[in-house]
Amino acid sequence: MRRHPPAHPPRRSRPRRGPAAVPVLALVALLTGACGAPPVGMATDAVRIGTCKDKTTAEEMTGLSDSSPAVPCTTPHTLETYAFGTLTGEVSRLGPDRPEPEVLGSGTSCPLEPLRPYPGAGELDSQWGVSVFVKHPTRSEWRRGVRTVLCDLVVEAPPATVPRLDVPLRGIMAHPDSARVRLCADGEALLTCERPHDAERAGDVDPGVADADRRAACEDNGRAYTGTAPGAGGAGWRAQVRGEGRTQCWLVTDGAPRTGTLRAGLVAR
Amino acid sequence: MSGLVRARRTARRALSSPFALLTALCSSLFALRMLGGGLIGMSDQGDGHRLLCQLGLRQGNGYDTSTRDWFHPLWYDHTWYGEDCGAVGEPYRSTQLVVAWVATRLTHALTGLDGLDLRFVALLSSVLVGALIAAIAVLAARRWVTRVLLAGALFVTTADGAFAGYFASASSEPGSFTGLLALTAAVLALLRTPRVRVHHLLLVTAATALLIGAKTQNATVLAAVVPLLLLRPLASRRPGAAPGSSGSQLLRRLPALGLAVALVAGSGAYLHAQPDRFTTQNDYAAVFIEMLPHSPDPVGDLRALDLPVAMAESSGIAIGAPGSAANSLDFVGFSERAGLTRRVLVYLQAPPSACGR
Image (tube, rainbow over all chains, first blue to last red; front, side, top):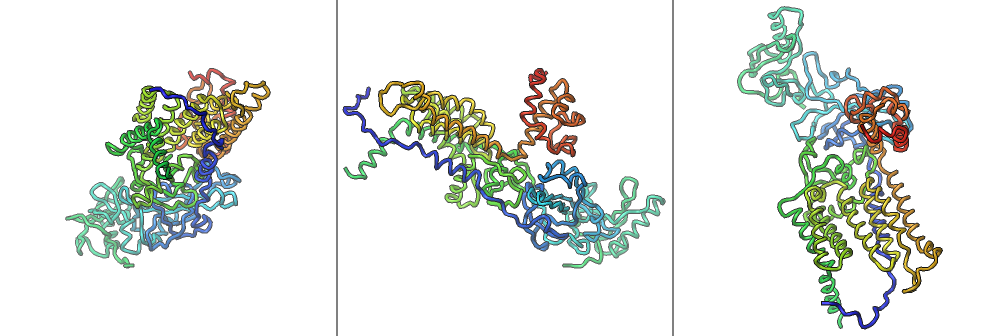
């Protein structure tokens, strides 16, 4: 049906001032541009050796810098600073803007020397499942001249699990919870001693001696490591020399896989 | 007549309007498409995280598990410190954040979850898409059949698997799609009105701003929008008045000119405000993934860009991959030397390389 034209001309309404474009644009500007600066929990140059942080997403862990607040190392945490890294002279002189992540990465190194003394590893203690993460100064810190590079330790965790620890890594080898970072094996698979395993690493043996002497040396290592003789005690270990070049000393336990460490003399927390 | 009766009559009239009916139909069907057979969504290749972390959200995936391979519809409140959020800490601006922000408020109000359920993004998108399709259909055609056919065609296109998943994703693409629909509707309103008013120009400007504000790539629409804004002069205040002299016609295009200048300047500022990291990555890809592998003379191109010729070894290698030219001190200041203008000049100097080989 056709519509009839209106009998009267339409009433002239007050001219509209246009749609709500201005408030919409203001809202857009507010929400897209003015979200404010993100919080800073701790400046990079305020971090000390032994500082712990708790970052719980992979995006944070792999981030270029770290401004998270410190947490006590006796509470769940994912990162522990064990050393300060160094930048090559050329990279550290770049500025005022911070170089691209790739340039920073190629000019940064973390010291490897403290990796064993930091957790208190002795000659027979083998670490496993610990990675080094590097954090650089933030953009604004770099502009202020900060060149501190953090070298952090991160422990291994099962897939899809946050790699958290609730004890400090510093000196951990003196405690039973060192099983979290000690090297064990389940068959051929290398893993940390807190997971079910049938062998635990107890240092190395001299490659320059005969096989029988290597085994004897490995038994000596086992005695020192466990504080017991081969086959004695609850664990009932036996020495086995493995690996390429046959220099690795392993303490093999028969029977059901076990968890924890054979290391003697550990102090409960 | 009481106010209540008048209000009910107005509401009834509004609901029986073609726009409202088509909006209700398209929105419902779109929501059904998105949620009816189980949620349709899109996983995140990293862009979603960069965007939504700015609302204090983290994706609901397990630690260090792939966000590309699996779709995670739930995002949770999270405090991001320092540079952990955005593009190496630089803010990533997009108008899609507005939709995501509203969706977080709805998620909290309706489910109690402190975070974001992407199903609410899907619902909001359904309403927006439905309303915009209806607006386009109503503005483009007068006959019901044509309107329904046009709305149907737009619906089928938008709800196609190539696009639908984005409407329940953390990406900024939904802002682009709805922005494009809004711009289409606004341009139709501008072109079909017998008398151009300021609000027609403002509608086109606002829709363009929303579209470009969603993703920087959309700035290319300016090439079409600016001429469209200037196409028709504002209507004279006196109905039925003669078109007027060329001087008065020019005068009546001044508001459009002002808005066009504002759009171009605003887009420029927006492009400039994008994270430097994005610029570097784009410049790197333009040189090492696009230009050098297809160039007859990669070394000559590098010389023309004032880059070390040794970088030719990184041709075809992505920025984060081993062998990348970015892993070198020579990469410092790369974007200044190999920015868009310099690259265009290189292509102009050697036209065959612009066409590939």
